[in-house]
Length: 370
Image (cartoon, rainbow, N blue to C red; front, side):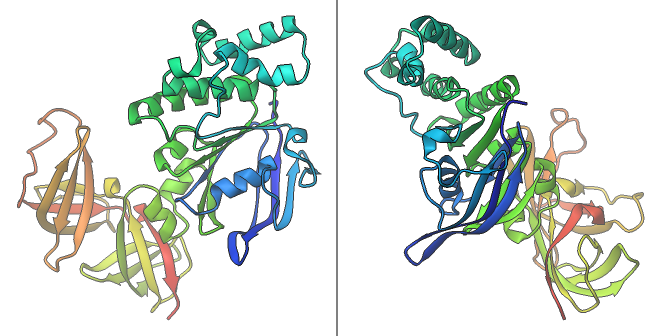
């Protein structure tokens, strides 16, 4: 790996009386693709700018390979940034845009030509080197910006919402390109985005932020499958929330809870609770099974309910069902299509259906002691 380790220790940032970053600490591994994910205004871009040196923290330290770089200006940090708006020079060709950092360093012309050719090949743009930015697509401009940032051979590449100006299909394509570039150069990438799918698609680890705090750090699987709290569960994909009280403990890993609108269910104790505690449970829609026939065999302890189809949304690869129970609680259920109309009998509006899920697919995201 060619990148640097990055360690943030008690980073805070205030603008007047407004605290943008609140005592944030975490480590980023050498060569890691690390994403800062959160809604607009959560502090993720400010945190990136502090790492880059464009903002000074109110308190705390930024360590690159064990050295505190807060006193260092941006150009002495071995860090480069790719901005949301590309920041290309419109009057320079692709070649000259990418060559610009090397010309500032007074590198020889022969070396510049060699390095620019190498990095344009890396981003698959060697045929566009004579064009001007106005002649390029959005995706091509972004690749030029990445090549220009990488040609300095930084140890950390910071990417601030780099794909937000692109349309949905081009974003997906550029994500694949970005991941491939990261694999080739092997340096540390720190990627800022508000798009959950982007972060989950390419990251080794994700830090979910809100209101200046880091709420959870983990792999994409950990963040999605086991959210630390209700904000993370809500922000990362869609989910069902069940609220109620613990009425009995089955063993160290399982309990029974009385949930509002649906009655008693079995819950898995991924957090410590006691009888009488109020809990908020999250169950992902794709974890809930749905059929028109009552299941006759499934593992003991599974939760099973019946209800009626209140709404269906067809999205191509799956259908989203909104199922209303007798007590007017609405479950959201996702069912992926395996074969066109031959999975089983189709489920239609107003049909009576049966839902069931494994308690281990539900996670407690809030506990309020009795």
